[in-house]
Image (cartoon, rainbow, N blue to C red; front, top):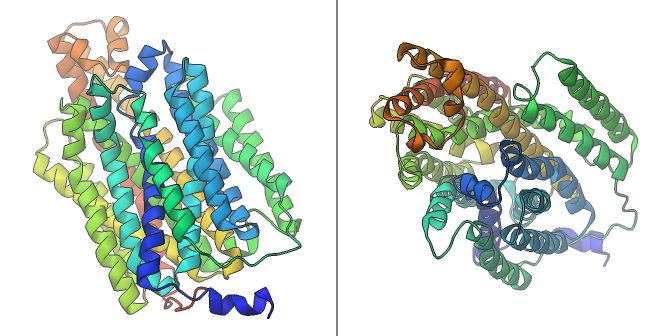
Length: 512
């Protein structure tokens, strides 16, 4: 019997016991991949200081990883359709481990930036391959049952990362280098577990062709766009020849990528999938959720530390309502999706709750009751937990197994792109608001803003005089509300897109 004939029987959904054994290793990998970016956030000032780095290099330590992980996501997704998913996962784990160790041993910021870029390739691969492999093991209807575990892992990694990073950095016998080393033992354990427990049916295709030109154009176009988002409003104005050159160049390169993808036999991003109504709407909604969630949540830790004067550890603890909301809602919604086979009602409800949560947070300032702040975060968490993974489910439900990797890679790519742009744009808005409010506050104190505004550009508030501290804290606390108002506006786009989704039942089989 041929492999193609035998595949449907062999690719039948695994029983719960075998799924959980393989899923344990996959969840460890996903957790380590996600926490590798969040664990460094609190420790970064100490890292750059000890390596004698500049503010520009500080930005690039973050940007290098975001660039490579976002740009490579659809490429890894397509490779998963063409080659062994298990082998690709093992290769990406190896790449991630080696680059993490290299980051820990970096002796200069230049070395750290280069190693973080390689680490981003591994992180992007792990994030999309885990979702592709889960989709290859479990039918869409049953997958909702397991999406709660994914949502829980994402929540713990998002909120627990900064908390863990602060603890590691503040512990004298560990130090910041262990922010990178900590991932290695867990990843190696996951590698061994997956080698033993992960058994997927791989249908060999003799006519495999990788679209290297399309992949290169997509990576170049996206990278140029993200570079512009990173530097605009800091190194040059929004309306300037640099902006025109970078945005125009990005549009031209991405237009060329679309032309290539429309003609090649094995496109990296299958346009016939993206052009369909439900996948297109799911991608738009996911991009909006990504921009709102990543863009908004990133600044919560900063709000608590600078706007409210809490320590990194306290800030991590104060963001627990966000994590709790994601964990509870993703688990409950996942089980309800599996029970009913319907997914649209939970997505629509989730994005609406997300929008309301951000509207609530848009009213906060540096003196707002923590109860109100916690309720807003809880609503945001519930909204993300109900919508983010279920949007992936909508897309996966509409494509055959042979296109699963490319489709999953596309929606993960757009969500990451939305998050990256959200962080950069909202960060620029926050910086302008803070600068204006600090200048006004200093002027009221009779201090020359031109001579003292530099104090507002550093996060070392404790080193400032008490009066200046109060001005800076008030500026950050009051300006954060504007960020969440913009996030609410972005989330409305997700509401509109999700309302137009077709109300279909999830299929019971792995393949169409």
